[in-house]
Image: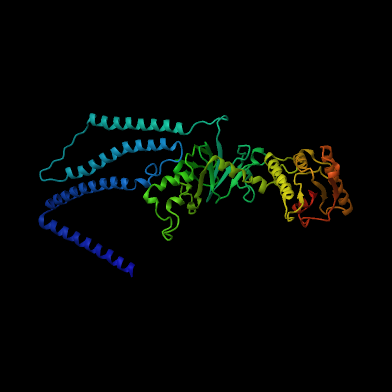
Length: 505
């Protein structure tokens, strides 16, 4: 019914307009074409002046009314160091273009009124005016030169050339339909190489080169993970795209740069306000002191739910809206703690798979540190446990042997055994057993012998490092105590292990 009424109203309005047109035409015939034209011209001229006044007043009023919703005004000041200079450049540009805007619109509509058709009026024609042409050429040229020069100076100030001596955090943002993958460097502070030819949608969607050691500790955030940045730290964002043109847009930090397939771009900025500090800034304004959800008037206020965000500022497809990501700025200490808790993509997805070029060849610093912490924590927890519920068996994950042999691979095992030696010194009453295990490949008796020899070699290694022999025993269990079914290569890898079993503490 509502649509029917609306259609009827539009129909009758059209009929009225048509009838008015017919009446006007009839009046023109009665009064004469010239008189009607002058009357129409006069009416249009007055209407143009009225529209000019209403339009310009409306522009000024709306700018004042919506000031606090515009970037750079009210509470929405810049959250980055360079943003204030950029806002200043925009304000300077607005000043000059605003003058041109007002002058051109006043002249446009005023001339429509001033030169309306009048009785006895006569048009004046002049072919050339050098002075007028000089004015409208020279003035815009001077203003444009000033604006362009100022823009170049601002750009150079906000986009310095970083050197190896500069302290900065480089992250990588890769856009695709319809998400962003964010990559952080690990403990080495370096992002590893990428090669589009290495892209594997199932295991390596970014095409990271695992042969580059700088890649193995890199951290990759998924499409919904919150992006964390440290306050008062220089951030360099390496920006790329995998399919179509995207745009890396952080409005509150005044960062906006295209993400172009095959052509990496970058941007440098320094966050100066944490998310919580910006919320407190918004809190002072009445329009932010309203319920964030009108359906829950007693819930959180709007300022409490504010988040910085990353958006794609290109219309990259119908799922374009889903590229929005939450960005949180925290203190440097909070950021370092968060980053230390993130696991490298290589460690969780590539390590010891058929795609790992370093399997059985090398341990990396982040693995050594993480494993040392795990081993120390596991032993300490068991020693301090008074409930008797914790397991006394700890897998020595970083003890490796040469292929088909009981000889210890010293390069890969020395860190684990050194940590164990430190723990034996820290807990002088600790007595342990080294338990060797194998998979079920080969003869059971042979496997038993191999497991016993490997456990004994670990014990001998620790004795050579100064640990008392009477605190350690070695025993092989062969293939009798598997952790997995041995049906796959991964299961066999789990079963080929050396365990630390605490006898007494």
